[in-house]
Length: 162
Image (cartoon, rainbow, N blue to C red; front, side, top):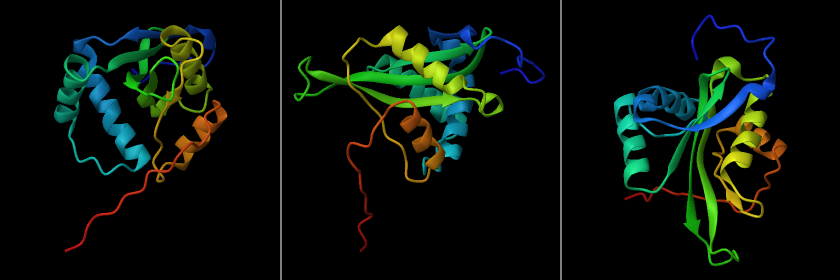
């Protein structure tokens, strides 16, 4: 989002979801770097590598990549895809891999509004959504609980020692 923009009086209804264009990948990679920092992820990728990863997500890994716009300015992004799931009648679930709202517009209800807009624009009634929230990201956990997500499983890890 451009610094200096003041949308404090702008109606929240001006949130839109659009497919990301390759020309936006660098901006989204910078946002992705902020997401990595905010959630305490151990991912060491730099902005250039994250940009290349977005290209790979879209071109070969089957992800959709959307920008989240507020007043025609990019304030965030989402990456997601269908994944096979034999427990679902439709045979798949949606994995929401990333969802990010810029730091400078948080706390205004835009994240919830953006998620509602994404859901209406991209997903069908009855589709099951899955996402992962790192243990190092308590704000993220609270946000997702407020949007209606419930804990389903716990992924645990260990680094094998000598």
